[in-house]
Length: 289
Image (cartoon, rainbow, N blue to C red; front, top):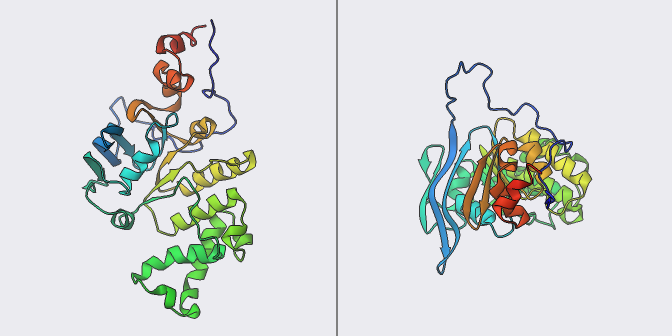
């Protein structure tokens, strides 16, 4: 019986532009990949339950890398481990050649590894401009900028407005963040992330719960902000994954199931089975039906 294949489609209308890591002239030699983030044996256990188990992840510098998998696969837990919101039970995390396994979240953020969250994390009672300006204030290195004069803090306004322009929010600068539609709040969160001058951005489900119009807007935004940066993203929308990601790692039950480009991963019978909930042999047979 022919099984219906869901999600894994080509020709979805979203296309990558100018993000290939392939050299035009490699003269038959293997390409050397500059890895910016890697893990070895990364494991997180909760009272004996392994939410993430022995994960080896390698993210190439300058790439957009997708982390996908069914619900409960361990994707957000993995994000929390990478950004130090959770300590690993065991394993090693290296960022830009440095072991960051024992660092705190603020310390890895200062190194340029900055994340967004699955739930939009903005200050709803501050204006859109003030949200971005607050992120920019970290450059002062002080802890008491809430008590600084308004005039002193206005020095950040030009840069904040430039970031809002980058994410298409210039016209919303004076609104409170709570007044923004959901898709615009996610754009604001990306602006506040950019304010931290990230070398690498980790985006947790940036298009979750969005309309088609908002999805297209965020996809275009991620493409723009990825220029000169590395992006690791968790995403359920496979059209977005296909259009954005150079490399994809598939997690299931806390373990790495497959890794490669979209075309390679989407043909993997075990990956199809993880999404379809069928036996790998049956999922594999759909390719030949």
